[in-house]
Length: 603
Image (tube, rainbow, N blue to C red; front, top):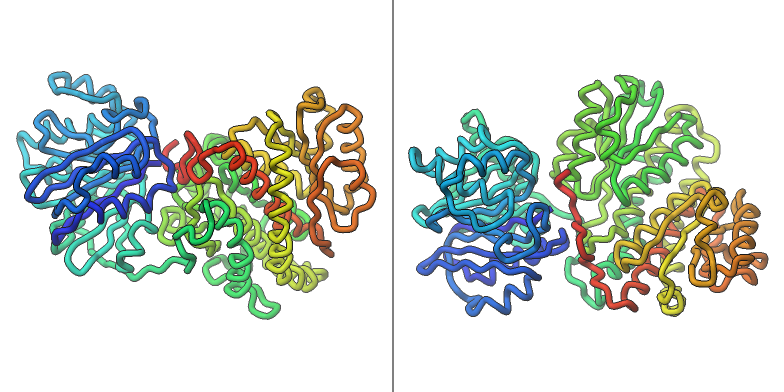
């Protein structure tokens, strides 16, 4: 969940390395550091943000030929300057940054008892282990010996002050290399490299890379030489600057109509759904027995929406579980089943582990992912890219609606194969209208801002929904707690009387998703029960609703849909805006909430 940046090549300024590091800020972090080698050597580590590191760096134009930098999200050891990366050996000759978790670091540390440790991290044992191994070998040979000693996940980038070489080691954690005219960039994420070069090599698992300023050599853990093949890679064209917006999250909320237009243009050709990378035979899909969906956080909520849609239109049983639970469950699954794995980054550790377990049991796996070249895209049998472009804000917005939209497209494609052809053309027509409906909702942002100001004073929130908008309630609660730090829980509205109603009084707020669908009257009853207990209600309701309007304290109206099964795509927007404006009113750090990371690459 940390960010790794590196460079080797023709002399650059320290500012260049910091610019790469800034493009990794969205991953979330609590400390950062940099080490560079040129005519002079420079090391700086701090607790805090990159802007704080810049302030404490006296000469950002300092020239260097080899450098590494890092943003750390604390796992072992508190956020402090001593626990920040880069870490170094006893003699301050080897400098290393790491993403991942070393599971046996305590055991290794005991064996290195004579070494001088300066931090409480698992990472520092690696650099001291390298120092120990390099006493009998050179640093390159020591690097090749590391897998014999380390248990866990690791992406490593390190150099020695004695050598003109950058060394990379990868196991179960992402690491990419970009080729420049005169040098190489290293980063843990593609968006950090793409602005500088489109020539990319994604290091595979259990590989070691050796970089000098002119060439790259790669070998695997068995010391077999691997072919080096840089490929041209592009990201979906969305500008990665904030532009006119104060935060990335707000910008990405407003990008959602364009994201859906991109998906429509790419996957829906006239009336035909074209999923080029699906890679499953029609025979397999038409004879499916069950579907399993795995995801974490927001991706799990998108999967819940998909479950409702798949069951209704494909008439298939669908099981869904959070990936961190699914990977350990002994659920019955086999070659006649399909697993759908959802991950924005494609690097979510628990989702990858659940995919591997499913494949071990011979199930086929479909990945829904936003990041080209990520590990998920390489491990699944079929793919649907969400085409949302880089999502910088830690709290997911546009990736969520893109995941739901892709699940809708797959459901309709599968329903057609299985003989369910009635209603499908009408649904496709309404899907084409979704971007316009979204823009209509986003034009209400001024009103939502005023509502959020009124509701910011409440210290506890319930979010209630029914049917396909129960997942919307879960996602609305997650967004609010992620960025405002206000306790918020999402529930099926029918469960309110089974516990949550005990919380309701004049000091609690309830957000009710109550569109005029088949469960509308049930939601009306729920709202009446809340008001009878003096609860404050914000209603997400349909246009021209005259029954609920007088019952609620505030309302946000949604465009009328012919098919309410598509409503989660619209309901997501006011919930995201509400969370954003509440957090802004409270002065919270919106794009990088405390303790959160964008890509959870460790267990």
